[in-house]
Structures are given as C-alpha cells and as structure tokens.
Image (cartoon, rainbow, N blue to C red; front, top):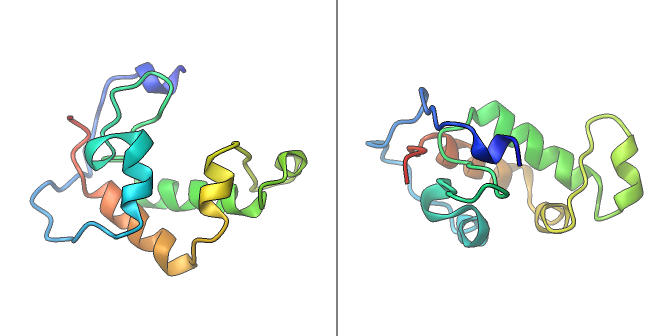
Length: 108
C-alpha cells in the first residue's frame, strides 16, 4: 500500500506521444485504471513509470510461472494475478506495454 499512496511524478511521461495503446493493455487497464493512472491505494500506477522498471517487473512476474514458491529466487516476483497475466506474454508484448505505459501521464 505504501507505493499506491505516493504522490504522482511522471517526469518521463510524454502525453503527446503518438504510441498506440497495445491491444494487451486492456487487461492491465481493468485493474490499473485509465491509461495506467491508478487512483487505488492498493493497485500501483503504471503510467509515467520508467520503461526499464516496468519491463523488469513484468519479466519478474513471468519468471514465477504462477508458482508462489518461486518468488524466493532472484529476479522473480509472485503475485496471484500478475504472475498469471504475465506468464503468456512474449518479450515483444512486454516491451510494447512498458514503452506505452511509461509514455502516459500519471495524472488520472
């Protein structure tokens, strides 16, 4: 909850970006809000985050392959929903999502 309550700073966001929303983003938006600018204290903002950070998180979720015990290993992160969502994503899909969300303004 700590990160969900922090003030929004999207220094790298480019709201005038011509990037098209990836088709896969709809799944993300269901929880993370319009353009990834979550207003929930328990769901983190994706909008305006650093692209490299978002990509690393998606890869870490995918590495668990839905196994909650695997979070103990380096570069892995388990979450009941995110691990299952990230598991089938290709590297290209993850890159596109990270690039698009990082280009969005974190202001909802």
